[in-house]
Amino acid sequence: MNWRKYFSVYELSFLSLMATLVCVITIFLKTPIKVPGHMAIFFVIPFIIGIGVTRKFGSGLFMGVLAGLLIGLIGTGDKGILNVFEYMAMGITMDFLALVFKGHLGNVLVGCIIGAFGSFAKLLVNYYVISATGLSANILIIGIGVTGTAFLVFGGIGGVISSAVLNRIQHIHFLNQNLYKTQKPKT
Image (cartoon, rainbow, N blue to C red; front, top):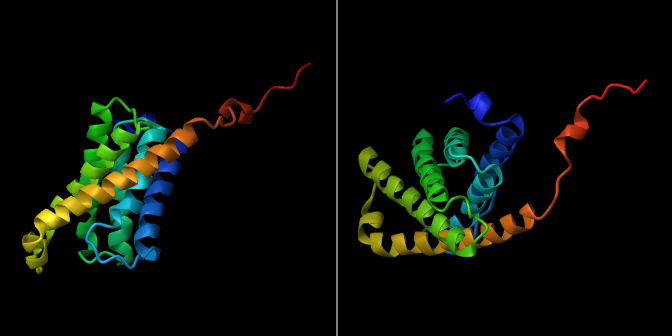
């Protein structure tokens, strides 16, 4: 697949902006809730909006790879560059689910499902990365049921919020891109 022909420059810029927003959210937005997975409310939103605006398969994967690289290279992730796999799994899961639901991301139920399972995919890959690197995975092993439920619930809430935002975005009519092309003067 040729990415230059598949995504336009506008779409790549928008997807890069959404991936950067995921990185900024994980760095600067700290909440006092001590429940695992509570940040899924916030980092699911840019993923679903990016997939919903571009409406192309691979948008979530692109955002996941870029967000994981940014989080891993800046040093905010506790697993370093291995954070790429978490966000990549989240993005590809959301891509496949958006394909299954035929891009109806403006529907609240679809947004809830895509957000919940995207967040849960991130949890599963997080668990395998932690266990493969030999880090302390006791917390995840003991509370995998509670943690999985929390990721599903918070990801679903983020999906509901993002579908509401996506509905508002789709009703805004942006300027036609043909206006910016140079026109020949009339003689």
